Image 1 (cartoon, rainbow, N blue to C red):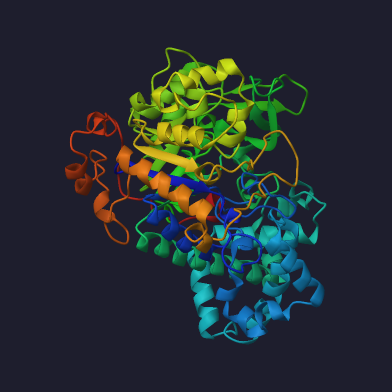
Image 2: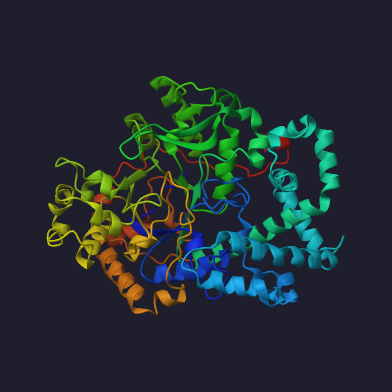
Length: 576
């Protein structure tokens, strides 16, 4: 495992929220490079993405992924696909679709359904052109696609087949398929591949372009001098290829959720299938490790969603039994979590753990012992007069103003009563900003400053808080078209051209400089910044001097090692 190499800051953004030039009404892989350059100009070191995995049609939450491998084709830049350009691009759309596209482009929210429909119509026609040209048997495009599918086997062919079969019977769960297909018997699967070869080829072609465009975008991000962070969802939907392939490791008789707390008095039921921990343990948790290893091919840092779930999961049995934790017993939970996270630490990427909510102390103690930083969300860390000042937070932590599930600081601040605001007003950074409940420039500056000047090695700020916006990305426990449809009000180019975003970035840059978090120039991949032994950045030591970071025990107890082989030659379809 790599460590976060130096004191730095980054921005968390859903890819869908980025506005890039003309686009198709949604952020695209090709927007990552320009966004990285814009953030890098302000001194940020990290661009952190929410999940970009494929989700089922009709869904918008990136945490309802149908695959931990496949990327969502909705993020494809169609201008970067030769066959789409040859069709004439958007000019090839019908008049009604061109009108719908203009509406999607100008909409303040992402219109997922329309964007998917419009892009899909062009992509299907472009694939036909590919088949008749570069994709002909023996042609260069066909050979390149074949090589890609081989590299991504076995997950890609199986995912493609699953999606094709699901689309042919969208109202029918795979668990109701004929038993031969449901159990993935060899003859039935091979027959299904033959019968659906062309549609499977189309699904593989989409992923070929997605991986190519994401890889190109990552190169741009690194040339801009930034690191890229990604997100590994904890669970997948029941109607996913991996649920089909790994059905023996899933408990379909229960769903995952969280117990009652201050925010959800009845708890939460996510509707996602639970895991069969005994079977996962029997396989050495190889499925989990392979998922992380695949993410590590693309990201310098991976956020472990619902990290406490690797120790224990709150399940809702479908037979009417009371919800409860599995496994039971603290010693068993500690042993399980330590084994899984310990194996994660052997993968060649840096990790951060989402350890928020009802998390027992032993989870954070285990993460600390393994050198995995957890999260410190400002609004939840100052709940008593005895709470440590953010500057005293441990280096082995991630400081944040909020998450995608919390109201932005603008809405949160104005929701506080007088007593709650007093907890923050006692801090020097906010001493002059508490004269009224209104969220103003002084409050914004004080809250951002508290996070940036914290003791945490990495500070991550949601993009809506960077600019003091009021849109909430997701409201947990609700179903709404507004959830996950947030879009920035400016294009990437306008971030430094328009006065409001430019001034916000300039002020954040000044605060990062004061906090010792301005990014450093190390080169395209900044390889020299990584020092796995002590997590220190050689180039920064001289500049930072005797920082409190230097006394962090961050490097102690961590594991490091060579990256797992992604898909070894003997990788069987049964281990997907």
